[in-house]
Image (spheres, rainbow, N blue to C red):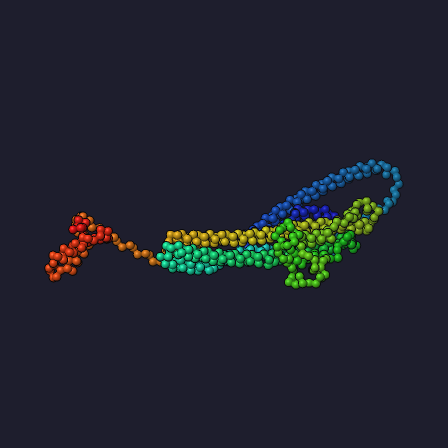
Length: 563
């Protein structure tokens, strides 16, 4: 059977299993699905167990080789001693032949060995150890399950926040209605007024009012988005998440503390049974309470380096709804040392302080530990006293090994918890930076679309043209853009111009068609039936020949004027 001294000597091998962190505390890739995360964790755990299995096999082989070498050396030493004893015996045979036979002196009784554990006692020790192990595994599984659940809740929070903010930015508003109303007023202005300065000024004022209205709608949307961001930042969800994470990690540390106390009790029982006397735990023993201090509230600022900031970004989260309203002086929780009126600190400091206080009270190395294991201290002791002293020293060494193990594991939990809190802080900062970038890009796109719309309308004003096609501010995949729908005509097409009259080329002394038509009409007016007076005819031609030369259509050809 292996003694507690050997167990204490082999305690350092646990560091190879634990390392600087608890290997079971793994990070989860938040970008994959739940099935991918589960498969990745399963593969990682299988790989880690295979590696540990190979290391254990290697250590076992080295231990077997070492034991075989020690056994061979022991056999060689025993053979050498046997040969020396045989030679001494042969040398003394001659002297013994001349001496009278005398009764041999009685040999001294060997010191009593440690009593072996019978089946019932060994089963009792095993049952107590199994109970400690089962409680530890159950508590640790529960704690790590809570950590995984908090990670999932964080990813769900990021996803829901992004979706809600995206819907808020793309929510419909009254911008298009304002554009349609402005375009109708623009096209309703009479065409004659478009050529006047007063008409153009009226259209420019109409465009200016439209711009102001669109910018006002954009400002309202930006204000609503900023209020939503401020509400998310001040709702205390992140601080509450940090508090729950700290509590889950403290529960894992509490499982380690319970395992330490249970292991010490099992070691005390084993050592007492082996020496046959009830042994007390070596000083300083175990504290009266093994409960970790539980914080009621923590701060969680976005400035990771400035933990003493006067104006934290998030309100302190409390463990319960009525935690902040407790009377001053009440204990914050089971095992706490300070009252509820104690100011909360940063989540990392709360976790580190709680574990540091526990390490200070439970993991202090005793200054007198191991002094009883000095062989010189056993010289004056005989029999049962010697056995009790040896097992007392072994128990002290084993307890110190358990303290060292607890100190390493609590330090690993502290490192892991600070890393998880840092990831939560980075996740929150990245989320708000992303949402703020979305808001800025949306406002820039809206401003660019409004400017393009105003430029299009002002160009139509200066060109003295209406807006025949429908104008729309549409939210496409790349952002807000101005769309001119040429398939939708708001005004009818203007009628085509009349064809020009045919040109007739006539000589200088020849009557044109219009002159002949007018002359025929005048002759019919002067005639009486089929006859006309010569005097009237001469008078008519004289009157026509005296017509001014700058008339639009002269009644006679140029050679006929004057007669």
